[in-house]
Length: 75
Image 1 (cartoon, one colour):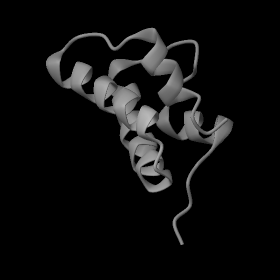
Image 2 (cartoon, one colour; image 1 turned 90 degrees about the vertical axis):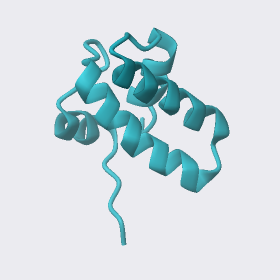
Image 3 (tube, one colour; image 1 turned 120 degrees about the vertical axis):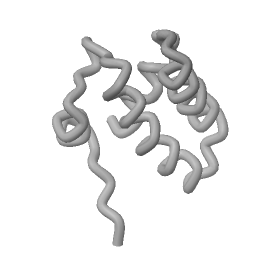
Image 4 (cartoon, helix red, strand yellow; image 1 turned 135 degrees about the vertical axis):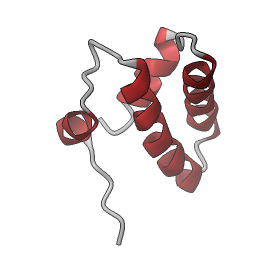
């Protein structure tokens, strides 16, 4: 059985807080959320995760809205 971290535990494990998104850590979080959202069929969140990951790979900043979706997903 896969254990999915949630809430404060997930942010602590990823080293991020909702107030201070870090591009590297937000990408790590986006991959975790992408897997969960894919499993749940949450297409809007999948797209937000992809935008965050793409922004990180391109060296640009992801939008605040997408970061909030990713970082607050397990709340």
